[in-house]
Image (cartoon, rainbow over all chains, first blue to last red; front, side, top):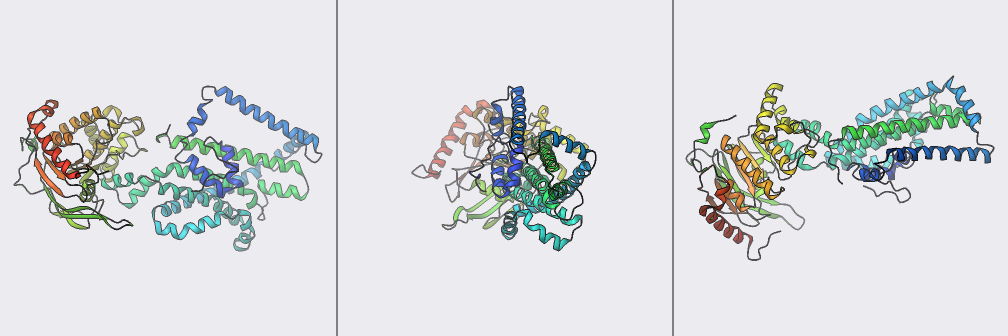
Length: 301
Length: 278
């Protein structure tokens, strides 16, 4: 596994937002770091959170302050730079969009990401399990997986258009690819890290290979699978804009590209905010699932 | 599950030697591949274990006794020799030879109950049947109130009792125990030993038990097999003729002390003049 990239150390108490952004911006380096930090899972997060554990209101207050500061900074920027649309024009644009295309765009993007991520979740888990378990397969496939992971999804778009046309398939394909790679690598690492004592115990209890995968390796890898899903979902969501460059007629990415041809900045900002907020919500849901489904784990103190 | 038939068979725990052996270990040699060349861990080990016996493998660490247990368990294939159970050759793991590991090896994603049920489901038992067995074996190890607990909520001793219950649940013909009490504190260890001895007396399963604790070996065993240091060979097989059930007082009897003396000398000899080993 790679070390955390020095310019953006992913600390154990990195929030979901940081992780999601980092994963989108720099998947290659971050995934290893996030796996290190989060997968023997959240070993340090209890300590990181512990400092303010007794004061949840203090934490809430901090978030509120952060929001106010951010909004103030944007206001300042809009005052200083004429080209940055002010809040009034943003609100105007929002009410216009909300009355027309915004929700179709949001749902179109969500559906693409949902389908693409769904495919990637199933395929990535299966391929990751097999690669983690069967060394020859890993040796054959891992260089390609790592190679493709290094290429920004955007670079595949022209090829995908040529190969798969301009229907729904290429968009979903690109999104699925982005999620698949993150999930595969995470699951593979997870399977490699399954304590062999569980495998031995299961075998002496009468488990064959099939049972071993379903009832031992899969649950033992679950924390890694969920980390993979979280990173994969973040990748899928951040890829949606790129995917919707492929002859889309709706979607948040389409909203951005279309608005940019008319030099309309407010809709772009609205779309960006929507993408970010939805991404945050999805990330929080994945975090919640990680905590819920991984509650059996022993936490190192 | 309870049978008084077997319990009457031997007063001292040494079983009738005229019966057919449950397990035959014959001419086992084994080595591990290393970059510097093969490391021989077992050399020509032969041993017969009879039904209902509690056989303890005792020896310094690294003498290959755990490897031998893994071979009997079918988790490892010996380089030479063979293991047969009831005359049939052992080639792979199976629920007829349940194993208990030093590291408990409870599945942390299952509750105590789920762990115990694991092998029962694989056997294809129905829900009611599983329920009955789970209750039986958890009662046996005094864990019934903790059936819905997660492994992380249990102490080391409780974890090991749960692991033992999981092994018992399959009603294995042979119970293989690899330093099962090696990771718990001394007091818990005594408790676990007493619990194990009591359950063994009740059901008289054949047990193959690995330890490097001499007192544990004498107190539990009907026979103690002493191994030399690496590569492991059998130095001596000692019958422990102390009547069962044994209790705390047993540990201070003259007989017990004599066995301890004898085994201590053997083990010390096994470790070599430097007192080496890891």
